[in-house]
Length: 118
Image (tube, rainbow, N blue to C red; front, side, top):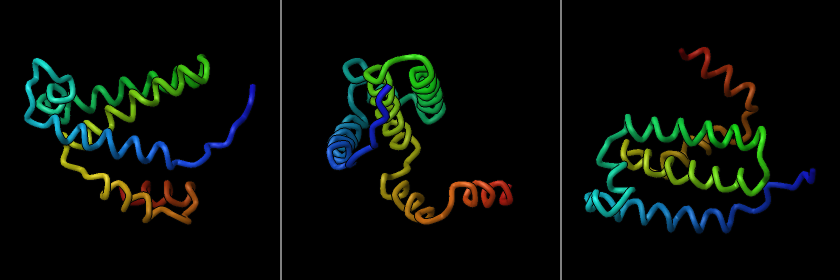
């Protein structure tokens, strides 16, 4: 099995930007014609359940399927994450801020700090 680098996020960033605009444009749309509009209208709880489902599918794909399946399941998860963020009112800038705050912090140290806050 080939181990490849994650590579540049430039293309993914462009596609996520387009997808986020599409998600935003579906808010208030016809739920009979738009799956995205239906999910957003169903609210954060339903969106959260879909994210959990898609996350499990990614995990299973990573554990037991090929790279194409992993990529496809990850695309599904990214879509549902964007819909869930929109349904909850969390902007991509807020997510970027959270990532920026963690930059340069060891994952172990960050996790330990979160555990102490609970």
